[in-house]
Length: 441
Ligand code: SF4
Image (spheres, rainbow, N blue to C red):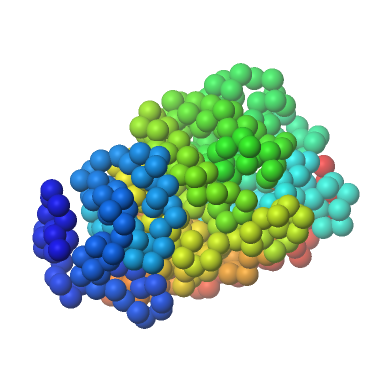
């Protein structure tokens, strides 16, 4: 059955050079593939409303909140059809390229007064496992990453009460002086807000100062769910939605790009996710400053929110697929890149989501403390070689990108890979590194 009003899926496939033997729908189970015809089989099984919404998306129309909400609860054939449409839109946007970035996470302290109920990372200053890294150690780690081929360091940490007003600026300055070409992707909107509070500078002046010091981009974290009622349950001390939006849009106006995120799988309802995504879409239409959107599945194990706050224990497989597909569908034409968080999903589910609308594998990370502290067990490091091998298993073309999605290298075939791959990275384990100091703040 052909789609009404536009081309059929087979015609769409032909237009993109694909054949009927191509597989365009996600393998929901490992090694199980769903052929192109699945969409034509599943669409008639969807309710007229879901089918109409998916057809509207394919016609390039924006969905209403009600239409988006129907997709946000899709199951069975409707979910398969949603995934197929998301995968089609991904291909239409970026082709078969699946990107990754060689980066290193550096979480410079776990001392934090904010007390988010979903966080397993933050500690009080007197906790036995509280730590704070010196500037020298942060720079040493950044240099180690640079020598390995990293183009980005992602710097975030807890919020110690007695942080020096210009701490973030001085940390940034130390890294950029040592490694002028390293892209510093750093300081969540919560940290920016804290820096503004501590320095007393106007937000715009503070951000301009950080840009002048070499801040390359800002992680769009601290978003969780952009709804003040939900935020009250997750973290009453965190910045409200209006302030998050103000910081992000001011950064964009100053030419500082940011990412965008959403944490799902806890106390939120599908409608909250839809409102979150539609808000991001409207912001992007205003500023065009988001480089990517990253759905972040809630890691529940070591969190107060799960133990005492009535949260769900994270998302199951179908919900991961649904959220990634919905993100592609609702952000299509606005935010180009949908990233999987392999540290939260694991590799297998990440690969499934990369066939459900996502197109970016994220970063090598090299070390990861925040998800691990909350209970994630998928490791801290994926090498570029591993990324390329994983991407090829789903028929993707691996490409290394910069933080802002400039393609650095495309590896069409395994023969294109670097002839002498760098040796596996041996990093000092964070918790045993001698420069950690207990409760330094
Ligand atoms: S999520 Fe960030 S701000 Fe919240 S408690 Fe954890 S470290 Fe602190």
